[in-house]
Image (cartoon, rainbow over all chains, first blue to last red):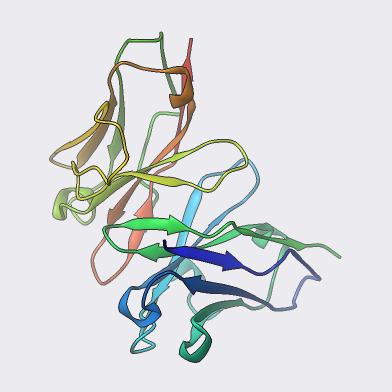
Length: 116
Length: 110
């Protein structure tokens, strides 16, 4: 079955960058888009963007344009989300999501804490 | 891209029905039949419950149904059960390969 396994929790200082990985299994990695969604503690879901693992094409929410980069390594079926110039408001759980009918299968989430 | 508007909370007794609204604009909810709904229990990742306005993925009980009228989509839970107590989020395609989530609704089973 489709499974997404994300990298572990990160603690970063303001101004730094973080790169979260998402290893896919159970399907052909290049056949379905990967989306990224984040959720601050006690807050709602926030869509960040998508990536087509086959072409590498991406689309980002306006809020994150210029700060987020989504990439992939097809040889190891892994997607990456890098967020730069971190600030305290970026403290959240970050999810990668397999898109089939909609956001069908979610990774377990990666907690990113931004603190000085 | 503004978040879609959902009521902060709804509640119902076991066996009753509850409906959650999700209001957007003609650029998102009203413009496309790509509204999906997600259930999230505390500390867990969200789970897809409805896609394409009213379709249920395999394994989702038929107590969950979706609809749309104009710029507002709705999720109805019939025969409310204790395990339905969770947060629910709508999501809509907003054109140009962009998506937007709703503000979220807490469902309480009394």
